[in-house]
Amino acid sequence: MKLLVVGSGGREHCLVWKLSQSPLVETIFVAPGNGGTATTPKACNLSIDPLDFPRLADFAQQEHLAWTFVGPEQFLALGIVDYFRARGLPIIGPTQAGAQIESSKAWAKQLMVEAGVPTAQAQVFTDPLQAQASLDQGIWPRVIKADGLAQGKGVVIAYDRAEALDALQTCFALGGSGATVVIEQFLVGEELSVLALTDGTTIVPLVAAQDHKTIGEGDTGPNTGGMGTYAPVPLATAQIMAKVQTRVLQPTLDALRRRSIDYRGVLYAGLMIDPNGEPAVVEFNCRLGDPETQVVLPLLKTDFARIARALLDGTLADLPLEWHPGCAACVVVAAGGYPGSYRKGDPIKGLEKVSGYATVFHAGTAREGVDWVTQGGRVLGVTGSGATLADALQASYQAIAQLYFPDMYYRRDIGFKALQVTV
Ligand code: AMP
Ligand code: GLY
Image (cartoon, rainbow, N blue to C red; front, side):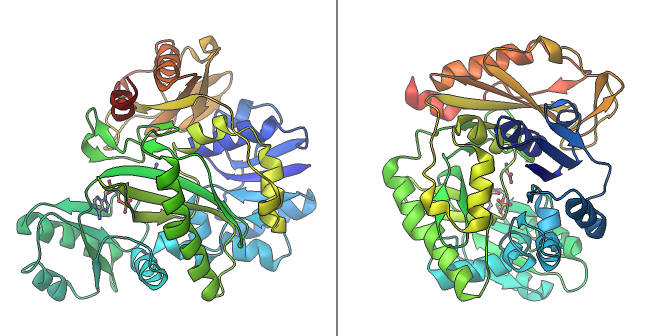
């Protein structure tokens, strides 16, 4: 079969890499793809802007593609799934209505309250003065969030009134006129990413991962899209995962169905696990995590093309997922300066030297002739695998030692919390 993957990040390269291993798959078109998908067997980058839904759908129709899988939230929030469905073209991902679970934090909060899903207590404001007045009561810190998609820039943990006022100003400005801001309780605990697959009826969690979101070692400094991940996570015991299923995933899917939303694809629960092992939702995303995907898919044994079919056909319950033993760790190699401003266009050296237990997933790269060059803040995600987390991390860091571009930066402490548990 021929397929289309929409997106250009490390997540999409990893998905394309996984699909390329399927005997069912003949060609994977990627719109627009990156330097890694340009050189993955069976894959072919398309120079079609994914925002141009009609052109993309024309291509899917002409090529008789079996289905399209959408990586980034941006296109889902803009209704790419609604557009393809209206044209009778198979596509995996939630509709615009379903994508609100990520594109509107106020909408998601309301859904969670309705579904009885544990989450931080929150108030929603459209009036800046009322939002400011609310700061007079309550305890610190509290979390201020812009309602819409803000690429990680819309969340501030405010430790006092001055910080909160600053954050409110930024968040209201981000949303423009008619902006909505959520102010919520600060949750204590350890974060866990659970990416779940759903065909609209059945919802199945993938192996849990943990992401290091901040730029600095020791989980310090500004937030990024994610600097490294590992899976499985010792924190995610069978008992905790059972609570996630019954208290978070299933009730959320049920609440979506009550709103007549046919949600198919990925529901990503960003969770806080408190010291008593109780999960609460920090946020939902309507897509695969990046770089969580880069550790979850390498551990998945089941053919992803079969999973995609099951998501479309509503037969996920009949397809038990199988997993490879061992661990995976992904270390993100970023351009110096990220998440602030950074250079692009630097040649990346040493990629051909990486082999064995590590795989390099390209994120912000482009192919220029026979070379690869940097083209984004997060440039590469290097996934190592091994029997233990320590082995997986070692494979990843050994591979990174082969790589070079000017000012490359990566965290040397990915997985540190889990290493403390397992050592
Ligand atoms: P979000 O975009 O909502 O996931 O927020 C980004 C990050 O901010 C999360 O991954 C958490 O590290 C942190 N965060 C967001 N909301 C809360 C909260 N209520 N309590 C503690 N940390 C939070
Ligand atoms: N790694 C965090 C995210 O994908 O949102």
